[in-house]
Image (cartoon, rainbow, N blue to C red; front, side, top):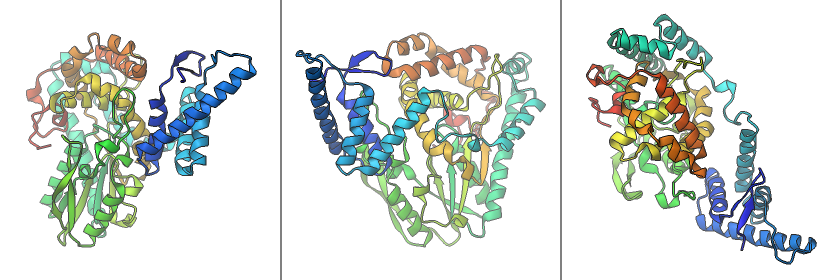
Length: 453
């Protein structure tokens, strides 16, 4: 019985074999596998080898009490060994990559998939120019809009800027319309994909171009096939949580003019439950894919590139805090999601922020890394939204950070909560929701939209 394990910093913590199983299953899912029983079997192999090593080590040291413990590195080495020896070479490779990325993170180096090539400098330059021209580059300038009774003006010019972003995307679609079969709208969580998609769809309809959405969420694997960590949380943020092979096959059939039976995913039951109906494209209709992972290659790998238009959405804020540090795009999106989850999804901010590690890990590896392949990038950040988000979130952070600090497994959530809490202290508050247009993207998160989500 292995009771404890030695961490990299030398501390002794309780041994939990579920963590080994979870890591193996994560690696397997990354390469298309999802059999938990195999992960559990390999975990048992690892534990058996560990027990042998411990006995040998104790005997060599003359320690008859068997009081030696394995290190994290020894456990991970054995996982690789057992995976390879059991014939799971692809999973072993994914596991090795996972270890390497985490070693880079511990060393303070960049993630493998998030490099400078993925930063849209030209787009950021336009955004920064707009922010400077409209005196909206510092959080303190937001305060001047609020106190100077000019906040309604900020709402209006921010909405105008976002509208111009939509118009640019529509022009790109029209430029490609001759060969176009699929429009893909992608981007990380809470970037505003749904509202942006609806706006683009309405404008194109007025121009005689009909988009037919394929609801990718219906292609989730059953929840029982998703890995579950030791806190009971599911990781359903990766593209492998979707049946990519079926999605690709259905898209190919649809653009070939064939009819397809679309599955129905019952989110209350956490599994597919029959069919939602059939779908067939008419002669002049274009298929629309609105998905986090729309630009993940396997989803549309059989569709020629010329037939696809890829639109990427991100909150490209150029606002700086009082210490002249740029406000993180991911933090803006996390605050949006905290408000939305509270309003519409029966998730409290604590659940949202503790789950965000899966959201962030997946978007760094599978979503943000695809930005460079987009045909057009839409900036969905609304400079006036931070005071609105503060109004919705201000009461949640009382004692919030103290609660998270006491839980070791939520160390990353504590750091995020602390950062957001400090940021909110610098943001002025605005609670007059009537000034926000009913068709605003922000309504997707705070409610009161003319659109049905």
